[in-house]
Length: 185
Image (cartoon, rainbow, N blue to C red):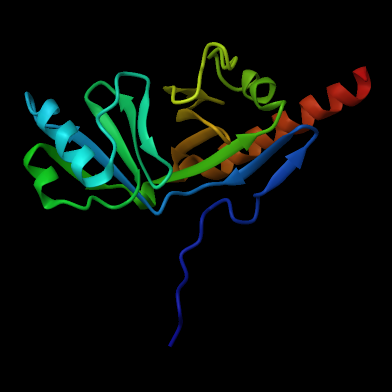
């Protein structure tokens, strides 16, 4: 019998390192899309906190710890990253959809992370502006992405079908910044 193994579309591309930037896979065990029922946000936030230790965050923010984080992904849209929904009562307050196979997460680390992403997104990712816990849904090399500043770096989530393209674009930008630093220094 053939044994099938789940693989990320970027397994053969990551980790990648160039200069002062490193791109690594950081796929959460589960990714659950959360769409609160109208008027149920407060109850959902309380239920999430009881079940996962994370409340619904404000727009452009995240809450929780590495094991279970809730990130804002758009108007009345959130994702629970890490744990699978632990309490069936959450469904009384929101539509919950397992989208784990639809998203790929990578983390860009190092002193050149912002310079690398400056080539790919119009956002100002300076740590004084895009601080720890900030989240943005934005364009990244002509595709939609979710960026999240964590203590370890900037997490980049893209739809699975764009993962290889995104990783390739980020790697190319990393190599370009590293080459510029070598020439200038």
